[in-house]
Length: 140
Image (tube, rainbow, N blue to C red):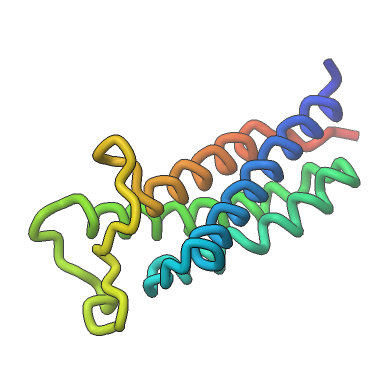
């Protein structure tokens, strides 16, 4: 398999993960009517644009998107780690979310005792970051 084909598959995978994460986010807020907390909004700020830029990069086979999309996935993932810690670590100091209408430690869902919305976002950011880390720019 050529580097270009491998990159296209990795970019398509990252793009599909971003689409699924965005669709899940919209489902929880628009269908289930869960009101996002402040950290949820920050995670959305980093996930939603990935749908567009990874889609364009996949269409054009542009491996250079890695240098723009990877930092977005890493920052978004870091926010997800903080959010998940607030939900699952007793006594963890809450961020500014404590003063907002929806506290960030609220768990709308808790599948299997550990899968919250923050965990799902973290999983998506990690998968995207791993796929982008594996993308290699073609050498002329």
